Image (cartoon, rainbow, N blue to C red; front, side, top):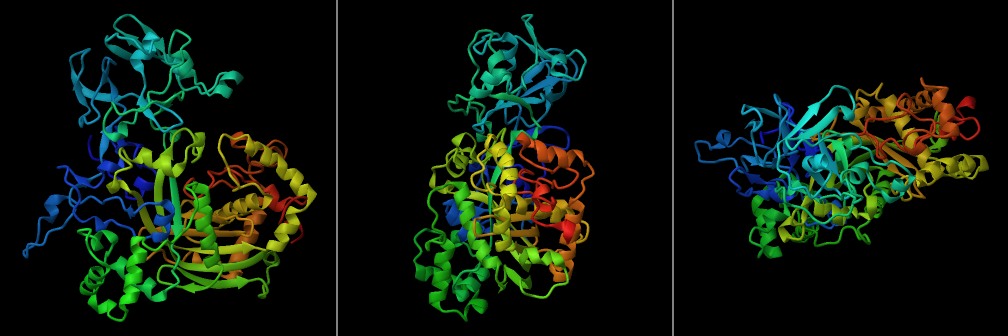
Length: 635
């Protein structure tokens, strides 16, 4: 497969192991498993892994892995052969493995289907049908299942209506003209032919919906035998890699969004209790002193490690005691338990991490990687009547966020779909051999940025939630949410949580018009526990210097409350009203009618900005005269 340029962050957020990526020339490739990351084209392992290691003990401990590594950047070997002193650049020609997929392709002249090897690099083949050597075009369909498997569409089995067929005739995919799947047919040289009608349908009737049988599983065999998922995992490096699976697969377009949903867990950097040890850890980070570097042979004692640190950076470390250095080393290596979290449920881990973040963000702080400044709090004078609904506004002038890839799903974005535990089963999808000691790591990347953190008045929220009219209205949304195939846990089970989520969207849309960042560059981070009512709106980039203060300036008291007021005023009328408001109040809209008065015209955000894929949104809970929290008609 030819090289495809990708950013490091894309390998975490969009194109991780098991994902399909489309090249500029239209070829599609599969990102290989983590077992083969950090190898060069000669299959040599990267020599200095400490260069890629991210020191974030809090997140690493929560994920129960020994290390976090950034995806390797690519460096052409011939450009780093060495200088006049003989110094050369390490870790050159490191590739991320790519596999050609789907492996079925057809001749652009006679439409004959051919199957190539996953490792085949060229798209040119000699056609068996017309004997021309031409560029082959990959088929548009693959099949996936809810357990994360990905397979080639069973072309031969489909046309013969038998998953056990032995026919080896030449296949052709022809179009009879039209825009539906009825117009696409598969023909075999044995005179069998069949259209592709129904291969992308999930359900046909109520009985099938209850049993989860797809149309593909029902229709493939001429007999009543249901076709089950082959259990293929081609990103492991072989077309034969598979495991037993009793799920019923469905055909999807290879570039469809539901082919790959990455599961991510992120944590904002929080300072430790020992200030000196914290400063030493920052020194470690600047000088790339990581656990990998401190354990080159695996036999080093703590005294050896302290000597190495002093020798490596004597000028900046001389003011600290050996005890402080030892504490920093133990903290960095994970020998000191940073986060004690029961179990591996991803929702529990995320809630635990955010609980700690909330406790830090509500107070002022001045640390190298996290700076929080008070802007306004309840009791301070304000000319804006909307301020009575808020408790605190803080400016986060600098923050560091680490985002780790923990697994992925197919067909559904839910991280617990089908009872799959994200952390345990997710790692099995990312690694071919997840139990090997050298594979006890996850890919991650770090970004720096700025933001605004604010909380609503807890007493007013509780008083509002106790209103019978609010409870009655919210029950409709809660009923629809429970009918979803995903498990929402306790993230959006109260009116307060949906209120905060919708408010975050409205403010981000308004900030995008005033702060210099577009909506896709801003993100939300919600703090929705029972004793929390906070929102962090922030922007981040890969540069260690972070961003330029355009968002932080919007956190000033006089500016912020003006932005909130304008956002709520605009929320009073959507360009799709009265349809948006009326449907939202009466039946709901969006996936499973889970949203209220919310649509693309008023409160949706780009996927990179929203934590809940634009679900659990309702403007009514904010501005309606009867059930709205903000009585804007009287402000």
